[in-house]
Amino acid sequence: MTFEPAVRAHLEATDPMMFSGVDVATRRLLLTKDIDRIFTLFGLPGPEVHAIQDHQVAVEGGTILVRSYHPVATGNLPAHVLIHGGGWSTGSIDELVADATARHRAVETGCVVVLVEYRLAPEHPFPIPVDDILAATRWVIDSAASLGVDAGVVSLGGASAGANLAAAAVAAAPELTIAALVLEVPFLDLTGHSARAAIRELGLDPEEAELLVQVQDEYDRAAAAYLAGAPATTPLASPYFLEDLTRFPPTYVLTAGLDPLRAEGEEFVRRLQAAGVVASVTRYPGALHGSPILTATWPTARRWQDDILAILAEVHRRPVQPAAVRREPSTQRMP
Image 1 (spheres, rainbow, N blue to C red):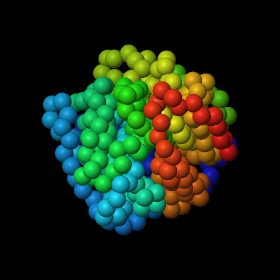
Image 2 (image 1 turned 180 degrees about the horizontal axis):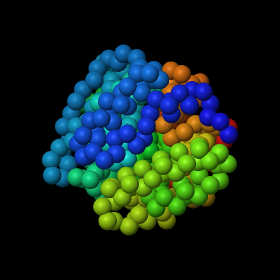
Image 3 (image 1 turned 120 degrees about the vertical axis):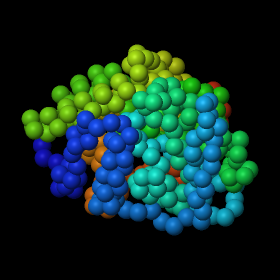
Image 4 (image 1 turned 90 degrees about the horizontal axis):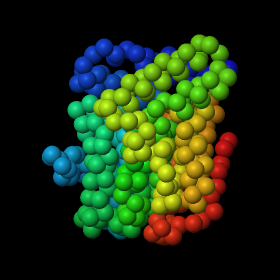
């Protein structure tokens, strides 16, 4: 198997090991600069929005920054809470890719997008980031009038570790009425067992397989820092191990065909469907974990982005039912 040219170019422009061995603060700064560099090379900037506003949200022990993107001046609009990735210990709403994603989703689906600067591990390990996402989501609902938001139509989305936190927040507060959950390359099984089994099943040549093993080693280190001694099978840390999924909102999972995390994301959808939850999965062949950033150079990444916009446009028009009575037929879409 050979990586597609756009994916190969992305790989050649990055080195997942280049910032190992530095302290956490330095690693965060260097990674943010590098992700901005990669996005400038391979990503599409977002459109102009009407307004961007920063807010401080109270959490236990202080406050966190929440940033809202408004497509129009006024309106009773849907809201989409968007949670960045970064392995729980890096990443920021200030990254160019986070800004572009928020702009696209706000303008092209007509919703207020809210980015959350949740606190990071290892200083703030599990369950603090989950609590921060819950606080931010509740703040959006409680502040709906001032934000120009319809409190009854709020969706959550996230990528990688951000997807983990979105799923965990839904599980931790099933009383919240959430319109939908959009999980991109979700990190759901922090034991690493699902991902390592998936690498063996991908049929890659030795060089490519070794690359994914190195990536998985990084995943394992990130998970350990986040867990800080908590068992990896703790359900709110690893939503893969949740026993009761019946109160989940409609859930849309997007997986990368060559991502070690693909298997756990797709199995999670199967379990949601078995629980009677509206759930679908779309797999993008040839994509790696970070390939969705390639919106300027790879048609598959643009389709990925367009698919999410279509999902949000659909769910934000759908009346939201209380979680306990959701029992629509499930679908599964695999390219």
